[in-house]
Length: 224
Ligand code: ADE
Image (cartoon, rainbow, N blue to C red; front, side):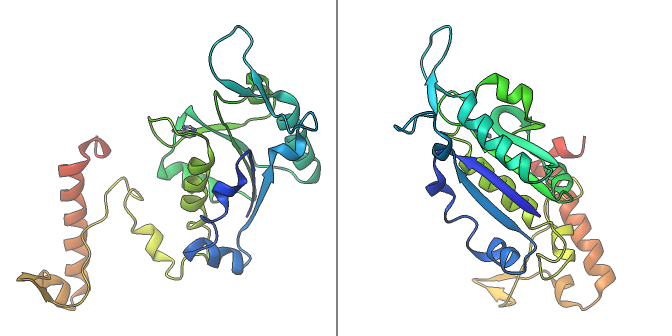
């Protein structure tokens, strides 16, 4: 999978993709991430990419030309399955969207800033708008990092144990059951006997049961 990200703050995206699972995905050539600095497409030598809003009001808007030029350049080089704008008024991001996106080949992510991007860029080019939750970030970069992380770990071959993504929280609309590692007893608290039993059928049933219980207690909305 190839992901192109357009941003005015590329520094914000330097670290998230260079560690742990995403690093491995890139090393295994399962994932390519390319960051594009919007200022490289600025309309003047001052690096201008934003302007005030028509109609007045506080806050700057990312202008059509720089963004349009950046998108057109990328589109001339390959076909994108989705051109995604990260925005608090987009569709709330869920695991099922991550699953869908993990099957794509080329994704473009556009990070907004200030008051957002000119509506005409949304009308002309954007195919999907994603919000990572009902709160407002300073820009789309952290949201983009979250989307990329959750999508990349689902690409076949990225996780060592293929089944491990399937047992994550939210993969069946269920939260994950509790997990334990050594020692078998810590500060008087014991690992549930069933996990030490070696009976995998019983262990599976226990985990299913715990997942259901946890979901009922914490996120009954997922079961509705
Ligand atoms: N940009 C600013 N806030 C955001 C949010 N909640 N989700 C996605 N992009 C954003």
